[in-house]
Amino acid sequence: MIFESHAHILAKQFDQDRNEVIQRALENGIRAVLNVSDDMETSKKAVIYANENSQIFSSVGIHPHNGNDFKEEDLDILKKLALEQKTLAIGEIGLDYYYDFCEKNKQKDVFTKQLELAKQMDMPVIIHDRDAHKDTIDILSSFGKNINGVMHCYSGSAESSKILLNLGLYISFTGVITFKNASKSIEALKAIPLDRILLETDCPYMSPEPFRGTRNEPRNLVYIARKMAEVKQISYEKLLENLWDNSFNLFKKAAKYKQALEI
Image (cartoon, rainbow, N blue to C red; front, side):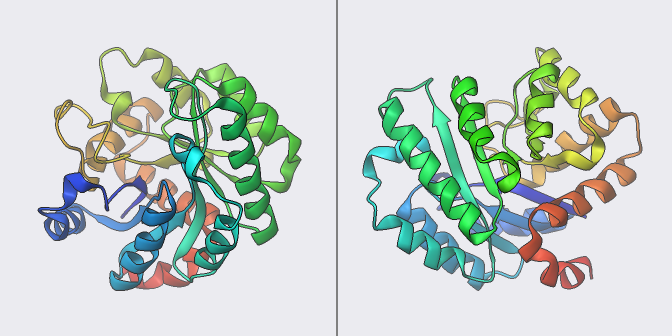
């Protein structure tokens, strides 16, 4: 059984075959998919889509690329959406200095306010950090142990991962670990305890080998998991068992659905 911890199922790349994508995921052992939002529109749609599909869950939040669209009243809407039973997390939130879609101080303000919302609601966060590691860590550290969540699509070093682990975060890996030039990610994966790791595709992006450069989808998690088991030097079955439990340990609102998903 596999828990897809980060997918963008409502992305336009899936408009022509979304139902088939979900069916292929189920056929490949993916029992749960967390459909992650990046703005107010996708947050609203994600909640509806989760309520319509038994294996789908939602997160709600504003991605740093969309920080300029943020309005204070959005926090009240996000809070309402987060109260939905199948909304598991606040996210995808964070900082992105690689692109210049939103001024840095605005990004930090929107990130901080969504962290405050997550703290208030005792919900985990899904964190995006690209070329903004120091500011991301500084903001997270200001909340101490009052925030839990996952650093998604981790591409940092083994040394940097220690800081995230000390903050109580889980760390999630994508198909990047299957690439030939993934030595840094592999070393980080080796260093991170098995009980603090999650599995994700970040689809429709980040396809693993042998599908690099094509549209990604949840069924490709099996390729990432096989590589992960190889790196961690454990059986594929043991890896999946641990990652399944990790997902429910972090996304606690999903616990009520766990038994049904395992049938």
